[in-house]
Amino acid sequence: GSYIEENSASPVKLPTIKFTRLFINGEFVDSVSGKTFETIDPRTGEVIARVAEGDKEDVDLAVKAARKAFDDGPWPRMSGAERGRIMMKYADIIDEHIEELAALDAIDAGKLFSWGKAVDIPTVARLIRYYAGAADKIHGEVLKMSRELHGYTLREPIGVAGHIIPWNFPSSMFFMMSAPALAAGCTMIVKPAEQTPLSALFYGHLAKQAGMPDGVINVITGYGPTAGAAIASHMDIDKVCFTGSTEVGRKIMQAAATSNLKQVSLELGGKSPLLIFDDADVDKAADLALLGILYNKGEICVASSRVFVQEGIYDEFVKILKEKAKDWVVGDPFDPRSRLGPQVDKQQFDKILSYIEHGKREGASLLTGGKPVGKKGYFIEPTVFTDVKEEMMIATDEIFGPVMSLMKFKTIDEAIKKANNTKYGLAAGIVTKNLDVANTVSRSIRAGTIWINCYFAFDQDCSYGGYKMSGFGRHLGIEALHKFLQVKSVVTPIYNSPW
Ligand code: ADP
Image 1 (cartoon, protein in one colour):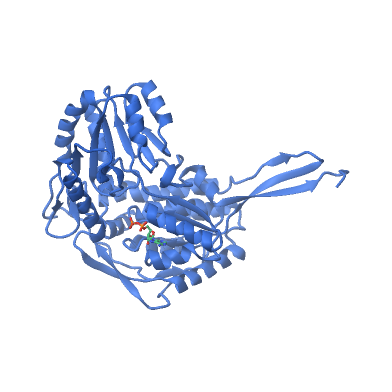
Image 2: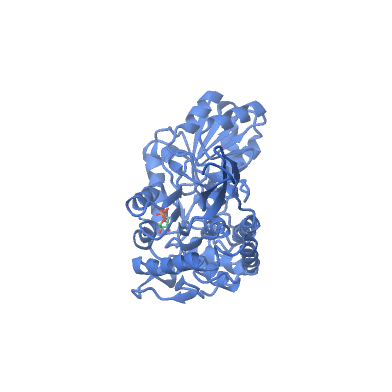
């Protein structure tokens, strides 16, 4: 990839930052401590704004509001249709602010403005509408029981949910996690990542505009070990939903276990394989492989960070891949020519570069990239390693950056074995025209999503989530709605029964 030094092409006016305080019970308020923290623009390393630093006391206030909105408020009591109507309005209002929201995520997370406009923010509205449409289709079953009993089940909202959001998809993750909870009738505390608090606060404001009752959505900005931990260990939160690293996922589960045994769902790390077979269209396979690791600068949990190519096409694949990698231009996320923006922060930038150094030390070869670019900000070249061995750290660890490990295989069995040789199990890709190969491999890989001849083919109706140490519970689809519902059984004797 090349790097665009000067961003001369940006016609976009940077957004003014309107909301920097906590959103609790329908109001923007300062944190109890009065403390604030800086949110940084990864394009430059400069401060965008200071944002309220929420901590335990603020989480307590937000939980009180959410508890009241759940225990006494209208949200879980109104009909599903009515909740759906408010959610539809919310989606419409978000649609009216696509540019502003995409710009906020671009300066806060370094995400491409054009993709934010075309993908992330429209996805938000689509997700909300999908779950709004499900809100009035939540029902239980009638049970034909023995012993002269009549029974039925109710699906009831689980209560107050805590959502701990990662920084890589600040908008779509906010709603992948909260939209099904809203449809279920839950109220919630949302904690965006400290790197990317800006759009989340805007979503609080827009919820109010849409007529969402106070206390249904509360947004607490702040750090993980303080505000995040307060959510995970809170005695009055019924469910914690976390998306992020496997290490933090473990802490969340521990905190849930030692507090009130709140339900937990975790969507964690990955080291997803992409398997490319001899019969594949090499050109298309190379495009998929690059997309799979470079989309969102590799900051995506389902990234295809391990690419396995069958030996018959390996050399040709490598040649084409190297050529095509040049098209992945690094630059300002507002520049329409850019396909990779900066990594989210200095910590991630340093971590990725140290993995690259480690890969070189371990004896892998750099096919392309490997260096930071630009005079300021956290930009890294698209990087591809060949001569990678399965036990090297670059092949086992989630790097969460634009770094591909390319490996070779001979047989289908070997491909399956290598693909499964990971503690993770989030996704996998298969490129082949052979249906038998596609079917066999799909069933043999232990991962929550398999993409055949495509990658990142997400849809609101298609759930995804982890096998193994990639977590449990599903995002998207009706599966995600059921995460926020619990089943109550109601039993009554039939007239004249011995009861
Ligand atoms: P990364 O390591 O890639 O930055 P994390 O998993 O640390 O990702 O962060 C994801 C989310 O988890 C963020 O909102 C972060 O603030 C939060 N978080 C981090 N540490 C904790 C913790 N100990 N308890 C609860 N939440 C946390």
